[in-house]
Image (cartoon, rainbow, N blue to C red):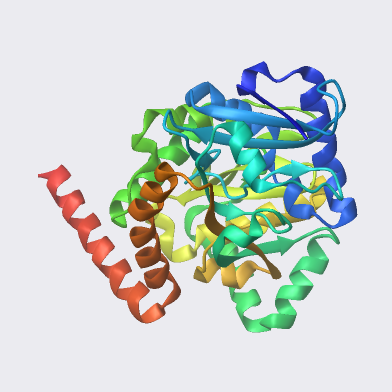
Length: 370
C-alpha cells in the first residue's frame, strides 16, 4: 500500500471526487453505513477548519500516482494519540474503501504516525479494525426507501395503537397552538441559532455537558449548515405551530442517509411530544427526497424505539501499536468508558443516573437565575 497523509484542505479535487464516488457506490455492494455523511469528505474538511489536528490518509495500491482505493479521516495529537475524526460528535466512523479492499491496521497506524486510534461509532464491515472492538451497540434506523406509507405500515404492525397515538400528537398540537407547518429544508440561519439555544438549555436542564458552550462546535455546525454539494448537505428541519417554531432538527444528509444529530424543542410544548412529530415529518420528507433511511444514532431511547424499523450496529474500541503512549492512553480512558457503558446498558442504573443528572440540571438553573 502507498499511504500519504494530508490536511483536509490539501486533498486534491480528484481524490475528493474518488472519495465521494466510493461512498455513492457503497450501498450497491451492501455497505450502506459507508454512505453515512459523517464519513464524507465535506465533514472531514469542516472539522479540519476547526481542528488543526485533523488529517486524511489516502491509500493507493502500488504507485503513489495510482488511483486511491481508500480514505482514512482521523485526528492526531503531537504525542501520536489518534481519534476518529470528530470523536464525541460523529455518529459513524471508519475507513472509506472500495469493495474487497483489505488493509493492515498496524501498517496504517504506523504510516499515520499513530500509537493508538480510538473510535466510538465504528461502522460495520471494518474488518481490519474489528479485532480491536471492545463493545458493540445498536444504532436504530427509520427505513423510508419504499416510501412514507410503507414506513408507517411497518410501525403499525409493531404497535397499531402506539402509532395512532404518535400520529395524533401533531393534531393535538395544532388544536392547542395553531396551524402546524413543516419545513424540511429551512435555510434561515436564525432558526439554526434558535435550535442551538434550545439544545443548550436542554443540556443544562438534564445535567449534561453543553456542547454548544464550545465555540468551535457552534462554528462547525454553522459551516455544515452552509455546506451544499451534489452528495452532501447540512439539513435543518423545523416544525412550526401557530407561526412559531416548536421543534427543530439539524443533521447531515448524503444521497443515501439522513444522519440525525441535534434535535430540540420549545419546552413549553413538551406535552405534545413535538420531537416525535418532527421526526415523523422528517421521515416523510426524506422519503420524498429519495433517502433510504434515517440513522437515529447509537443509544437506546424511548422515541428511538418507537420510531425505528430495524437496527444497525456501531462499535467502540481502539487499535493500538506496541507503544507506551498507547498503554497510557488506554489506562486513562478505559475505566471511565467501562463505567459509562455499564450505567447506560442497565436500566436499574440508568434511571437513577438520569434522575441525578436532572437534579444537577435543576441546581444549575437555580444558580443561574439567582
